[in-house]
Image (cartoon, rainbow, N blue to C red; front, side, top):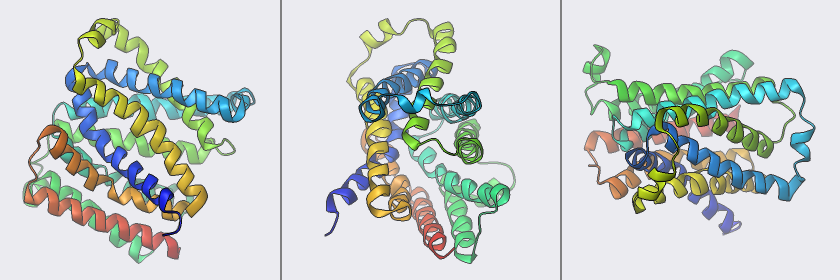
Amino acid sequence: MKHLAIHLKLLGMAAFWGASWPMGRMLGQALPPLTGGMLRFLTAAILLLGWLFARYRLRTLAVLSRKQWLGLALAATFGVFGFTVLSMLGLQRIPASRATVLVTFNPVLTMFFAALLFGEKLNGKIVSGMLLAVAGSIWAVTHGEIAAFLSGGGIGWGEVLVFCSLCCLVTYTMIGRAVLQGIDALTVTVATAWLGAMMLLPPALISDGLPFGMLAEMDGRGWFALIGLSVGATVLSYAWYFEGVKTLGAGSAAAYITLVPVFGILCSAWFLGEALHVSLVAGCLAAVVGLALMQYGRRAV
């Protein structure tokens, strides 16, 4: 198979991104949400800065304008600070497997607002995929009790917080589309990771104090989650994804994102012992098919 190594790396990317939700729950059990999120992005930011230095000697940061820095700060507010706080709080209230299925709302909302705000074209396949992905997510999250959802029940604060965290990611994407044009992806990721970590630092210190004592007492599961989130789900996944985009094209690389909910549910069962309910698996499969249909429809636009 041509480009086998690239395909394996993209598969690893999907696995890391799926596993990031159960690992986030594990980290939340070991550290307070603000401290855990701050340490995740601070560790990732240090590693990413080393990568940027090796590639560009930081020249791409030095040439950024004040307007671009303001755009990056706004993106970090939503994409790092808002997402981290809301997702970590949400994962304290619901199983990671349910949060993973909710992730399918991210590409659906992103595509919807891209069409609404920037005029990106939709077609029948994309709309059908969006509806199927949303229906599958709702089915999984409500354990198949769609009627309870429509009547306002079956959804708790955990689901609301995770959904709001995904809205932060969608906002991050829209900001990137609107005001961060002309900045390469690695520079955007490094800058937003650093800015987001610095935004998380003051409230984490005020709320939880210095983390050294907590780190000294953290068990192996906590360290596994912190390293997995920082190195695997952020640095390695980013590198593998953009290597895939460069070699295979954006459409082919992005298609692997449809596997994220599958890996998320499997890793939630493996890492946390969460039960694989029939409604959860069925809803996840429907959402994955919907995402795949959206991806197929994008190629026809």
